[in-house]
Amino acid sequence: MRNRNLPFVCLLLYGLAGFSATSWAGAIGFRVSPVFSGPELRLHVEARFRGDADGTTILALPHSFGSVQHLNRCIESLQVSPLLSDLQFSEDSSFVTVHHAPGQNLLMSYRVVQDFENDQLSMRYGLRPLLQPEWFHVLGNCLFLLPDGWNNFDVTIDWTGFPSYWNIHNSFGSQQQHQQFQAVGTNWLESVFVGGDFRILEAEVFEQPVFLALRGDDWAFSDSSLLALLQQTIAIQREFWQDRDIPYYTMTLLPLAPRPGMAGSRNFAHYQYMGMGLTNSFAAFATPSPQLSIDDLSHLFHHELMHDWIGCKIRNGGPAEDMQFGWFSEGFTEYFAYKNMLAGGVISPEQYVERLNFDFFDPLYSEPMGQVSNKLVATGFFHCRDIAQLHYWRGCVFAFYLDNRIKMRSEGQQDLHDFMLEMLDYYYESNVDLYNNFDFFLKNLSRYLGEDATPYYHRFVLQGELIPPNEFQLPPYWKIFVDSDGLPILQLDQTAPGWREGMQR
Ligand SMILES: [Zn+2]
Image 1 (cartoon, rainbow, N blue to C red):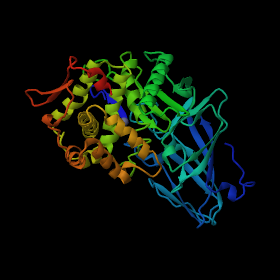
Image 2: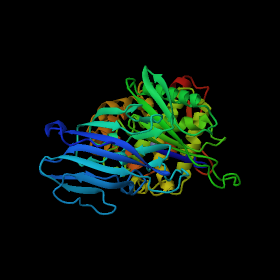
Image 3: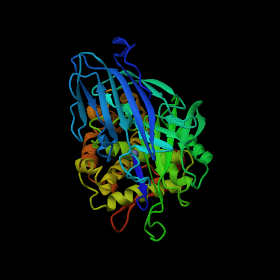
Image 4: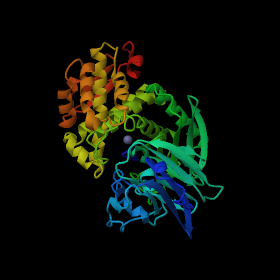
């Protein structure tokens, strides 16, 4: 996730009859329909699945998503039938216990509601269900409830009863009234579902469809130029990861409300934007300000799209709120987002050096809390922006350090990109993640470094020690100076032979 805030620029019912017990084993069928009531929209969801063989099924309610809390308050009128006893749950509970006949086919229904009254969309509310009379935008974790512990099952989603002029669009397809896919675990719930007056644009990357679904009329750029940026970014990234055969991708963009008091203060951000990398997709939000140019969004695109691999395919693992690997999932994402922007000609070499200095080295080395432990950064990640940024800065500087060390050791034959491709090969398996399988990371990195990587990981990540400037091993085109305040500053020597190819690798 990345958010930026200058100057931190950063249904109808199915009948139960007619379904045999076996046909629903390992499958869940959802039916979503709108309920319009005056100025309010709710989504009525029905789900049909088979209850556990022992007669007790635990349903998992949405609870938190990053810093967004109490998402269970967006679920109303939850019912399950037929049951042997009442549903057991309490306010703010994350789980509901259901007692039923062993292996019983069950019908669950509930309504998804917008749990705040303000219709002026701000970053604070962007990741909560947004339900307005003309449109909706809901993340998968708030739209679909699942029996806890399910793994490997078929999902069908039917969209019924929506106005015929509404566009239904999501992380799994566009304009489909019936959707079907196989789910492994709950990762697919990291997804976005929209409907209503969204404008849907389509392009192709490596002959695969890419969509942009957006609202808002006050953007300072055209829909088509935004689609072109998305298309270009996806092409660069799929090339980088040598991962071209991705059958579907979508991005959603919602306008944030103008910021109150925006006009007067010099230090007040004129605009904000943020994004959330999801399954086959990312959800973005931005203030349609004349100052928000398409170039501003370029970095957001590169960052969020990079999460398709660093985050979605190479997963951190562990509990959802555990950010102990944030230095990797956010910091390495930043490093390679900028490297790809450089390689794709989106930024110049001079801008690349400037970004490394001003967005990473300078803030990290001048931050009074720059040397706190990784544990502290992980704990404070969703509570304190100043702390959270350390993952971005520290991880990016560490990636720069490793990339150049590997280049120097291999005499330019290998780099961190090669390491990342091997990471993708290894970690892109279900049940393999950094949380449970970090030994591969260290072992493989040690191979690239030609020495044990563990001490470096302990010093520069876990303990939070700033990498001493004289410990960077840099190719001739990089120079590192220390200014009078002791801050390291990178300089690029464009007279050094091979600088362009070297830094772009
Ligand atoms: Zn991110």
